[in-house]
Image (cartoon, rainbow, N blue to C red; front, top):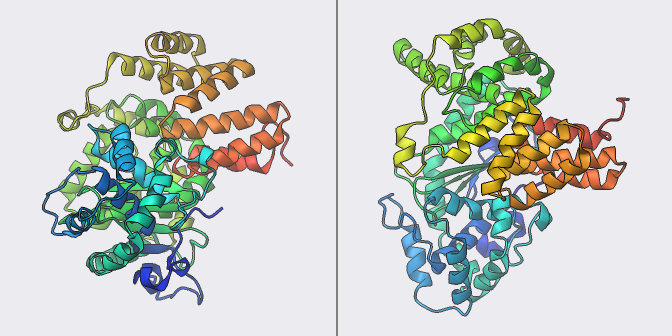
Amino acid sequence: MNFAAPHSKVAKPKRTIAFALLACLLLSCRGLAQAPGQTGNVILEGNEQLFCVLAALNAAGYDSGLGADTGNKTREQVRALLAKQGYPVLGDLRKFYEQHHAANDPAADLGQYVSLALLLGPPPDFKPTVPEKDLPPDAKAVAGLVPLTKRFYQEADLVDLWARVQPSYQAEIERYSEPVRKSVSLSDAYLRFPSGAYLGRTYAIYLSLLAAPNQVQARIYGSNYYLVVTPSKELKLPEIRHQYLHFLLDGLALKYAGEIHQKEELLGVARNAPSLARDFKEDFSLLVTECLIRAVELRMDKRPKAEAQKSVRELMASGLILTPYFHEALGDYEQQDASMNVFYKQLILGIDPENETKRVASVKFAPVPAKAESQGTPAPSAEERLLNQGDNLIYQAKYNEARAVFQSVLENDPKSERALYGMAVVASNTRKPDLAEEYFERTLAAARDLGIVTWSHVYLGRLSDLKGNRPEAIEHYRAAALTAGAYPAALRAVQSGLAQPFGSKSK
């Protein structure tokens, strides 16, 4: 299924925007243009669904970041136009936004509506492109906005307003186009990726002018990558390049999953880093890719040696323990002619877990940054410390101890998604399928974390296969497939589950 947002071919002429299809202009380092008829893999544009959703929110009281100096006044101009008249739906919109407002987290407040908008079809219907039950948790939580947006679209004549703001969007597209084209070209050149290697996949960069400033929100739905960029004085090129490198390299982690698995004992070392994000502690392939990308960025930037080494040490102390290895190994890569497609296997096989463990032993892991706490991210609570303990016990296969920890959390917080998920995993690994199924279902009812939701569907698919209920298993695997692209191990599990029933012998 193609989860990419629809393009201007479905819109009426007055709604058409002059989108910049960057990839159609890109030449590889060997001067090979894209094949005739290819639509390209990198898109820089506005997004009408996102515009309509955010126009409705701005009318309803979404004021986050209003008044900040970004050099772009589109949001203020749109709000002024919308404020000139009342709309019958406005009361319902305001009530909805108040009920779903994430007051202390501007990124999450915007993010739930970004997730929803990226999975909506074109106006005036705004029909979700996936079944509503399969929407990501944050998008599902605000799916009730869709009928209100449909009403607001008609009452506020957003088709006309969208046409009127095209010059502003085009100016922003033009501001980004050449720097992004250069960044993408240099990334392709460094990795020596052949032209036309991304057929069937899209990296869409959406410039959103009605959102709070200085935000960059990344999503992977199906096989397509999205980056939503809000107004800012400085171009968000590092973030755009970082997501593009994921777009290029994530597939290699999937292709060489077996080789990566051989080195997975290093995950136990990385799990001791307090500031390492939980997703990296749960998926070694994800950790490997992030370390490689950070190393590629440092090599591409050609920083002075002392500055680069300082950055490498800081990244290692944060828990990205393979960054030093990749930074050194990329020196060898640069001295030969093979593309990263060819060199990648050698790069992974060159990891020596014993040497890397010794290297990490000389490094003091960094604590959770004080800066994060000052920006509203609190230090780990007693519950979170217990949850981390439970996760580590599962990793060590100490299931009875893990069960006791998660049960103690659930006594105080019966809807803790991590504790419910932990209980489900424990039950699954101790051969209690009925109990596991119960806890995975309870997890899905409570969870907002994409990784937890994705893996819960995978496990439920496997349990359905073991019961002989193949249609139900396929349904769970397909639900997981929407968000599994961000989690290489989960994506492998989804692909395997869709190919044949879990537990069956390979053909």
